[in-house]
Image (tube, rainbow, N blue to C red):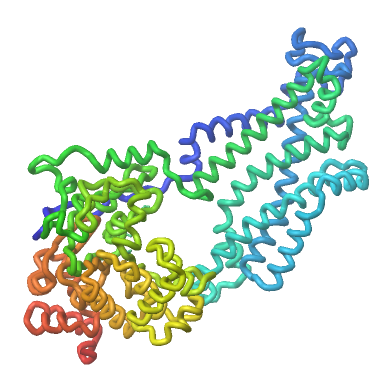
Length: 621
Ligand SMILES: Nc1ncnc2c1ncn2[C@@H]1O[C@H](COP(=O)(O)OP(=O)(O)OP(=O)(O)O)[C@@H](O)[C@H]1O
């Protein structure tokens, strides 16, 4: 079957600056506006203040608002509005000093500790822990006494106490990033450590630091006000903390004197907290949780209007069904998957229909990004949180499951559906032994006793070709090879005897000799248990090795589907022929494909072309 033509590429997603995305958040904009007003008031205080903040007029003592003094007078006869404006200067100046001190100490230490590890990490972490265990307020009072209440020194000391916040966050991020392959690549390319720290590492920690700074500024303002409330700081410098102290003493008789600085302080701290929270959302410091409205928008865009005859092929389902829904181990009808992006809905699976009968092996093949994984993740109900799927129907084991609640869908995993992932090592928890990871699902999902679950785990390990099951059961993932880890995962996937086994590129992370063994094992298990096997791959060699039927995907749609032999002999779509030709270069040990070459002169010609490219590759055949 050949699909109708459709646009070859999805619309490119434009990158929108953080600033522009921030401006789309109403709460963030209001908070930023409030902070801007406070900053403007602080900067323009000498021009905005109607009076000298320290000018005493006894007639103004405890005066109520009015008569040229919009906020009234304090207990010493000074104009409250003027003091509030000058107090904003003190408050913001102190917050800036504290944040800069925290940044300068915490960020370089955190990046160095995370990147270099070892002694650097231990020493820095020890200092950070020690700072956190010291009662900060008492030390600040001692510093105030020792420095003659020097405000700037006090704010630097406060910054030192807040530096562990920066340290912890940057160290954690640097620890995660330093293991990334691009850092190793930079090292291998001869880039020096200081340069890696300045470029890659600082860039990686930049986003959480921005958020942390907004939050630290709020904390700094609160603590600063607390110190001033206790009488720390010069009496001649107006500050919100001092004003609160004055108001507190007269709280019952003249509550307005306490109210004004409390409002200023509360509103400023709240604005900083909302700015931090908005930034955290935008730069994904938080777990992604798409808004209900965004999900609904994606759902509506995916559902779209019903396709009319001759309508856009993009809105019409691609692929075919070979079996009745009730007879299928898996059936997907017109599946669409989309993600909300700042520029609109990005549709990554665009109307896919396929099925697999019990005992059948279906290959889903296509280039990277063609939507294979998104299709099977929908079946497993494991789409990332931003993904929304819409389908006319999803059937597992002859039962419609697409409309079941998530909790009910989850019960299919490990029972009706087994899953073999792409990366064996990252799918095993390094903290637990293989035994624990195999036995736990058998006990909790299948209700076996501990002894029965262990016996079953051992039995399946033997079945997947592990000759020393007791040693492997007692091992941690790092103590076994990648091939063994994949066998362990296959054992886990089939231990519950599912009717459908889904394997997502199960051999990609393995070396060539192990790849063939794992494919052979999957085929054997599939036949032995009578399961349907849906295998996702970008390699036609794998398809030739074990599949009965194949679905070819491109740009989220199915371009061709049919029995493997027919697809190899007569690929109808040029894209399929191209994929087959490309696969000829890097596949080995494929009996069916070898036979196909013998039968089909067109494929021989393809092989000759490939061999000419790589020079003498056909010797390897
Ligand atoms: N969380 C996500 N947010 C937005 N787009 C995503 C997300 N996950 C995947 N995509 C997009 O979905 C498309 C299909 O991805 P998918 O993982 O299904 O490809 P694939 O065919 O399995 O390729 P590969 O073999 O490389 O895994 C890609 O364009 C990818 O960028």
